[in-house]
Image (tube, rainbow, N blue to C red; front, side, top):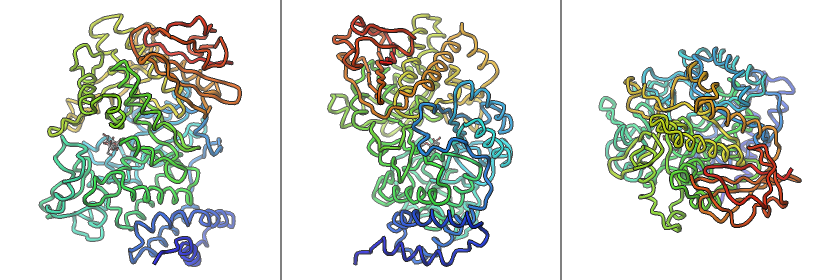
Length: 636
Ligand code: OTU
C-alpha cells in the first residue's frame, strides 16, 4: 500500500497540536508558533517518515519534539542582529573569520576586546571554534563535546558567551557556532550512562560485537588512520566495539534511533539560545550508516539533515546551516539547498587553488568549477583558502582522467609538493594522517608557510619572498572576488608562519593540524603592522581587498561565468549585475603571460578600471599579465 504522506502528516499534525501545552505562551507567541508549525510540520514529517516510519514510538517522539519547540519560544535570547534581510549572505559586505577563542584572546570575556580588531578588518561573520565542555587534554580541538549546554570552563561561562553574542550583534557581526552532531565525547552524560551499562543510552551509540564491527569495516573509509585502523574502538570491559569515525574518544551517535534525533535537536536549541546566527554542521557526511555501504553521504543522511533544518524553521527560522562536507564535489553540492544547508564550505575551490599554484596550471580548476560551482538560488559558498583543518585533495577523478592526469599520482605529487619533499617546491607544510595501506595523506600548514614565505625567509631570498607574497595576493584575490562569503582563518590575515610548539604537548603532538593553530601574540600583531615585514605586506594586501570588496556592490552580483583565456596558466571569470561588470584575471605562474586577444571583449568596452591597482587600463594595450598578478577589472 502506498502511504499518502501529506494526508498522514496533516492527521498527525492535528492530533499533536491538540495535545501540546501552549498555555505558557503569550497570544502572539502562540499564533506565530502555530503558524510556523502549519508550514513546517509537513516538511519535518516527510523527512522523518523514511527514517523512522516503522518505529512504533515515533508519535511519542514527535510529541516530545513539538513540546520542546513550543517551550523554546519562551526562552530569552541575546540581543539579535539588526540586519533582518532574509538573504543577508548574498551581500558583498560579508567577510568572515574563524578563530579559536583562546588562541586569539584568552577567553570569551577577553574576546569582546577583539571586536575593534574585527571591525577594523571588516569582519561581520565570526566563526568561533568549538567552545563547549570537552575532555581535558586531547579533545580534537573541542570537536569532542561532553556537554552542549555548558561552555568550557577554560573559556568562561554561558553568560560570557551570551554577552559576547550581544556585543557582536550590536556591531552587526554574526556569530557562527559548531553543531557537532555526528558524535559526542566519551565523557558526555549519554556516553557515561552507556558505559554504566544503561541500555537506553547504549542505544544512543553504535555498540556491537567484533564480527559486526569487522563487517562494517570492510566498506568504511578510514578517516584518522594514524589513530587506529578501522572505525571502531574496542572496550573489553563493555564487551563491545563502539563506532568512532574520528578519535577513539569521539563516539558516533546512532541516528537510526529516533530518541537520538530528538535529544540532539534539543541540544541544538540550547546552542541557539547562546545567540548564534549560523550553525556549522560538522562532519555531516557521516551521520547515517548502513551495512555494506561506505556509510558516507547516504541518501538518508540528507533526510536527517533536512529534518534538522525543518526543526530549525519551526523553532528558530532566522538561523541557517553551514555544511562541512569535505567529500567528493558532487556529494558536497547535494547538501546545499533551501531545505537543507544554506551555506557550504567550498573545499573544491580551496584544494584546486592550491593545486593550480603547485602545477602553475588552471585546467583542473576550470573544469571542476565548471561542473560544480553553480548552486541553487539563495544559497552561498563559504570560500576559503585555509581553515583549522588539513587540506585534502578533493576533486572528481573523472575530470582529471579526461585531462590525462592520474588522480592517485597527482595527489601523491601534491602531498610531496606541499610538505616540501618535492625538489624546488616553495611550500613548507606538514603531512597529516598518512594511511600506511593506500598512501592517502593530507597537508597542514598556515597560508604563509604553504605559499612560500617560510622558505623564502629561511633562505633570505627576496625573489622567492616576492613570489610567496604574490601567491598570497592571488589566492586572496580570487577568494575575495568569487561569488560567496570569503572566510579567513585566524593568523592568516597576519601572515603567521607554522608553529612547532604542539610537538612539546602530549595532547597535541600526534595531530599535526596544530602546526597552524598558533596562540597569537602581541608580536604577531606588531609584525603585521610593520610595513617593512612580509607579515605587514600580507596584512595590508588582505585589508585592502576587504575594503574594496565591501565598497563595491559588484561583489554581490549573482550572474557568474568562467572565462577561458589563451593560456593554461591563467584563471579568469566575470560577474555581472544590471549595469556593472567585473572581470577577474589571475596568473597562477611566475611567468609573464602573453594575451592573444584583448580583454575588452569580456568587459564590453576598451578600457577598464583595475580596483586592485587603482588605475585605468587601456585594454587594447594590455598584452601581458605579470607573474602571479591578479586584476579586478570593472567597467564603471
Ligand atoms: C571535522 O572535519 C572538523 O573540522 C575537524 O576539526 C574534526 O576533527 C572532525 O570533523 C571531527 O569532529 O576529518 O580532518 O568531511 O574531512 O568532517 C577533518 C569529512 C575531518 C571530514 C571532516 C572532518
